[in-house]
Image (cartoon, rainbow, N blue to C red; front, top):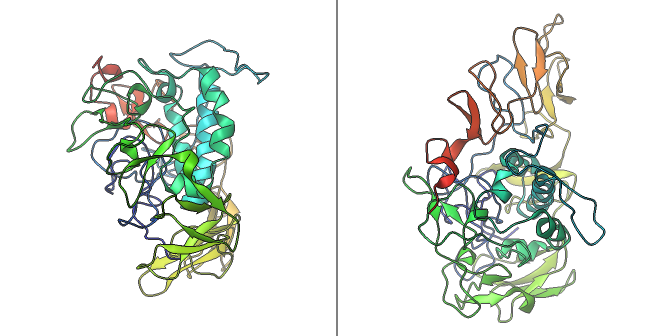
Length: 412
């Protein structure tokens, strides 16, 4: 694979920061790698603003078997729709959804496409659903259940080329807060980007530039367009051509020639921008880009051995990894992916001496049972932690990055 790995998994995605990488923040919607190349960067994604510039450090899939703070990721589903409340008709014959359901649905679609096109486990992306429904329907957002659910189809239909270029469908509308206004979520901002730098409370990034404007990366451009790698101008996404497998491609060409569906534009060398539309690599094939075919995962990503695609569901000393819902079980003297316990099941060190880990839950020591972590605005304490992307502040689960900032990001 010949794309540069700029800010990829697990340092991935949230349209709340700039394009640099950092262990504690989020990455931008720009998929711009090296200048002039169709480099892999980060797909846009809505969540809570960060405490610093850059990428998100993905939560571990397994729960904390010793209690205390959970490292568990995952989507929690509180009983109601939170502050947004109520039930709304999705329109056009779609099934009615609550704000919570609509937010979780679009998060799931974007997680699946991000995982497919940028690599890594979808669970890290899905962790942002813990911020629902606020992340989509907070104050000064222009998003409604109707326009969000209407955008599910276009989001699911995005090609890997679109995602790597940082293109967001125009149907995913942005908010009302201007540049430099305080914010809690990207959906509140006119630019669609709520960012934080140097541990400061987040503000809306300048952006939303029309087609033809000069740009640095795709986060500068209005939805439906992207920042061209060579011309550095906001370019209409409809101008992208999508070639079939085996056909030539060039993400720096004018017009851009990308690839259909999940095909990747692979070049012969880093010095070249022209390549060929190729299916994601399979078992045993190199994956320097971090992306593998469905059912496989990129492992062994180090300088000495390189990276290769392996089947999900195998583990051992060669760097093979289990799916997040499983753990590498060595109790029988070998290596095997065994399922993690789920909410309500036993966990911890069992009578056999085996360690049983939780999935999307934490192990409560008083009962040795997997318990769901706290959802947004639910009660919490040191023994009852919050879900991924949330922190326990003053006894309540709040968005981690904005927990010590003005409620709702202020009014701008």
